[in-house]
Length: 288
Image 1: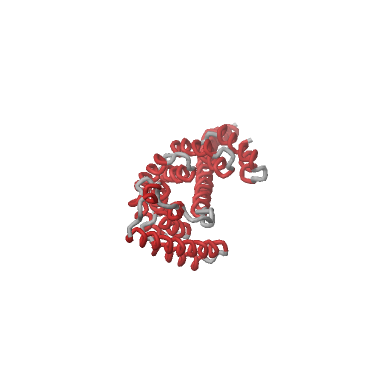
Image 2: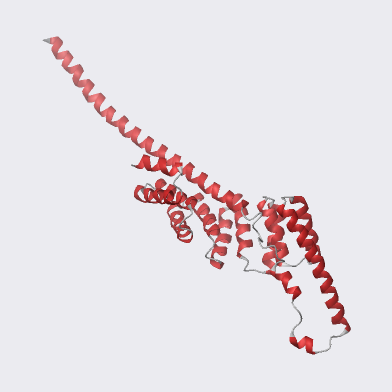
């Protein structure tokens, strides 16, 4: 009888200890698992944002000034003088200026042609030299400065790009691309406050360029304003509703905020435009 009583106490003690501890470990494991998933989704979101940024930084190396015509500022050199000047007999000084402009125009056309050939052949050093040679003829020309600044920016040579971009903004304070590019430099170096001010200014000048919004998403994400980052990403998707990379980033951000319905919605939209996207497929299986 005594043995039965002792056994009962042992069983009761085990029940009283094991079950509460079991529940405790269960909930702890559940919370730890949830944080691991959130952390992993954060890493995926950062990778996606980084990929988009790298694509943007590499973009336009060949496509910048895609037209092989002389930039707008240089095309103006080919225009004749106004009707009033034609009607009046030009002075000797004006004739000299016109002759100099014609020679200058021919020199520029030759350099432009050679530069475009080097760009097509990906002879970047020769291309750079030609732009500098061209710029030496007219150092204050905005188009030429932009061309060289883009070249350095897309090759991550920010030291050289920055001085040119500042000069561009001095010539034209409303040049949103130059403002955004400087903002990108601050973003990459981790100065998010300065980056936000510059990128926000670029957006206020030009509200239709998704690149600027992507940069702002990255600023907001890196300063723990994820809900604002989602709102900004929604604007990007409205501007480019069929771009899978933007849709995927938005889905990842919603997943990180544990808005699973919205995440599934955008993963499905990714597959509408890119049916072979493995990440979207895998995420939808996990969320099923």
